Image 1 (tube, rainbow, N blue to C red):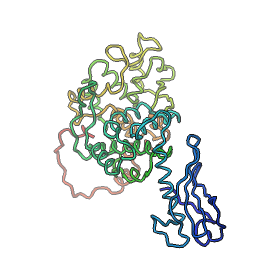
Image 2: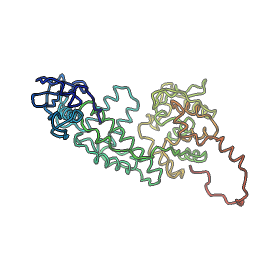
Image 3: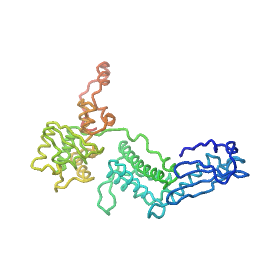
Image 4: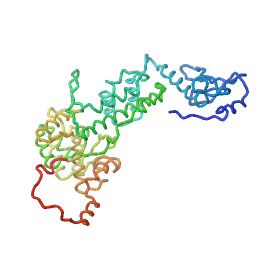
Length: 430
């Protein structure tokens, strides 16, 4: 809701009574090019709106009668506060009708999204490819053809709810019906889908807010009133045990096995590994350079002796500019190429439910945390800008002074009988 402005000469009927009657209104600017005017006559006053743009010049509209004599009713007789809202609605209607360049017809959600992507590029924001994929996959198919002025709160809420109930997408050939993973109805599965729906809703709202800022959409309350799902971002980190990691590597086939091993030894993201070149490995520094990162800031990942041996073997016989971890056909790994081989490897390794490639990054960080490595060091290895994200996901796994103190001081009550029964598969799942 836009802020209501005040003006000492126009706020009240008593203040306006001191003004002399004249044809030229007393103007109060709301923002650049937009103003509300008070035209005082012999028997009362009238509210006037004025819109100016370089393309259309000055445009005027009478908005209603002032409350100089009769009390304001919000429709025909308007106070200074009420006329500002009526004027803003008219300005928004003009903006929706004015088309830039060769645009014709109603301004659609797809156009608003395209304008948002253009602005996103202009501002030099990161993760552009991910933004464009999300818009193409989740927003345009359902809402793209809808005129922004006809996009209701109920429509957005229905789309948002449906998005949260749809399982993750699988790679599908062009022209074929989109495939999805099996639905995961566990509490964590529901939470993850709702979290994804919230992130997509944020993108839609950002695009619509930009459209409103550019005066191509009115009444932002329609989409601002749509609330995200609550309690969806509580981190419940899934990680693999050493035994599960070994099984996953053994179950992976071809060059995907090398990619999985690299992820477990470095904690790098799939995209970072796919873009890595032979020259990024620096044996003297015992580290690997990660030039392409989600946050846009390059980093070095320090390697263990096992990691150094692995990278040395991976670089053998290759040129500095070669892709370090190519596919079996020699080409680089592309977007979403990891999904299918990851599912197959989890199935063979009997890891249920199947994990995503990103869980390998969690496994690396979780192992460091459980070994007592400081959060700042883990954050540096993962490329986090500070320790907040690292602590949020992994601090609970670190050796706890509080827990150690409680166990040492509390001792044993002697109320639990000893047992030789050990649960099958203990320690295998997280």
